Amino acid sequence: MPDFSVLSCRPHLGLTLLVIGLSLAGCASWRGSSRLDIPPPPAALHDLEEPARRSPLLASRLVEPRHVSPEKELLTLFEHWHEAWMMRNFDAYLTHYAAAFSGSGTPALRWQTRRLRMVQGKTDQAVLRFGQPNIELESDGRAVVSFSQHFEDGELSEIGTKQWQLRQINGRWLIEQEIFERGAP
Picture 1: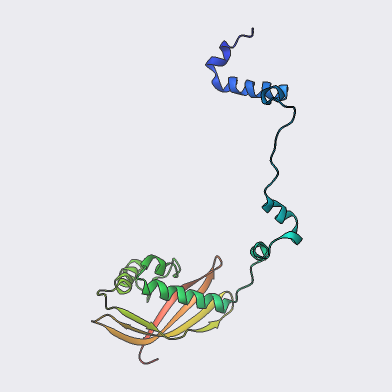
Picture 2: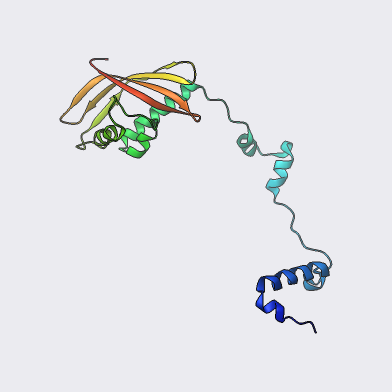
């Protein structure tokens, strides 16, 4: 009988030797048969291998994504920015601004603190209405978006035109500069 005392002090070595021994023996004696019972691959794998047999739903998911125009991307950004403001979701609101954005030359933390109060509203009566955005594409992944804005919170009422200077950074449009001009749009 072999001496297994060496294996008890090194359990990983014992397991390794056991696996090697079973693989050399072919595992046939352990399973009671000479072949392994491997189930066939799922039907979904057949669909991936044979494009002609794909269901229309699966095929539509595998199609290359369509190119979205920069104008559509900027309109979507405007809608998401507006939605974040209306839902009072300050974190989502900030994701639309470039990391270096400070707002009207004020330090970033001061701008964010002021915006936090404005977005979350000093009162529940804070309201922000927007006009349809005007989008102008510039060269080098830059754009200008302008729109009318009317803000009221019970203490303050501002009507004017907001203009964003945007740049595409890592595939996303982000607001780099924001200018608000008071007066009727």
